Length: 475
Image (cartoon, rainbow, N blue to C red; front, top):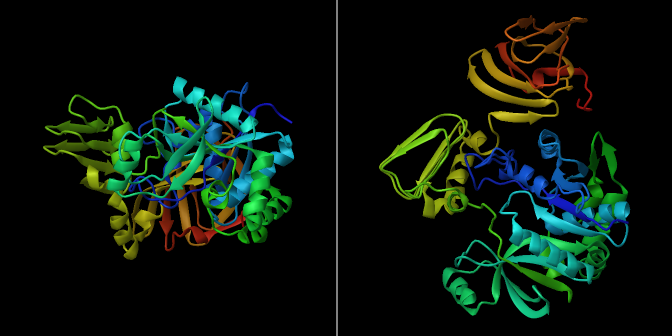
């Protein structure tokens, strides 16, 4: 039993609405967009007060498990658990599994706060007041959602109609409204009774599961079996695959909130955005005198009301207005801000072509359980990569049949095992690993190890890696 709130962070979503920065294998919650912290890390920081919160339980999928762990480690955020969904089944099964996990750990009186990992929130005094009101309402036996006070007739959000007041600052939910057209949104806002549906919740665990069993028994049964059949894998908890896959693909709004008599809403006026488009990013950013949101690696001239964003190459933009110019590691997007919600059209076009499909799926930088790899240059019979190894981590003991490798240490200390012998390499030192040689790389230091790896050979694919020993259980 705990008197603290148990945070449940949803971090499994895949999306490309912020392409070219977000990809299906690297969605926006893990990106540093206008901050040195990713949206996921900012979410962890919002629940970092141990006088109020238990350590967060993160729900994600197997593809993102190591980046979740690494981003939490980087900011020294304590995690309660990382639940891995075997398949995507929408929010109702995911929250049901989390609720069973919370119930088993903290007991029937627990209250869980459900947070999206990819929202931009100003967690100031207004936010804190809403959290307290929601916690009180949940303690009184209400299933609470947060309704954001509209600032415009947005058509990209669902809406909640407020019913009778239950307590100061809390109302009964009258109904949920699907994403409206602009005329309907304007009419709803004019009544003063409608709020944006944020998808954020405060839930008494026992009541939530009781209502789930009543209105969505298939979800209840599948999630219960998935948690009961779960098993530990390193620092992760893998939900039972066959059981979880039996759950219907349904949102928690449809499964529970639109049917229960216990749905309550806390009208919330704190600044919030789901950052669903580049236009939304521009609206939340800090603007210069000409209305531009510009990152350090960009220069603008005679440009107004625009978003110019880059973390690698330097962008120079001149004589434009109301545009988004976004530079990724391997692609640049240019479009009108007011049309940025349609970026999905160009992503679909890219995905249809074998020549460009990878631009929608993966970044040149990919995360591994021991760190990260960034592709720098590829050519015929060679590939150049930048490796970053987390302190204390090591790559698998491995060999390659078709390639040799050169490692040059840029930062930190490398412990290299090769042919049964071990040696230390320091900055500006290098080692050559011949084709077929059994080898391993370890970071024995306290700072990240960075290397340049040059691969040469007749075949450079990842499937030429033969793992002999691996601490992460990979084949």
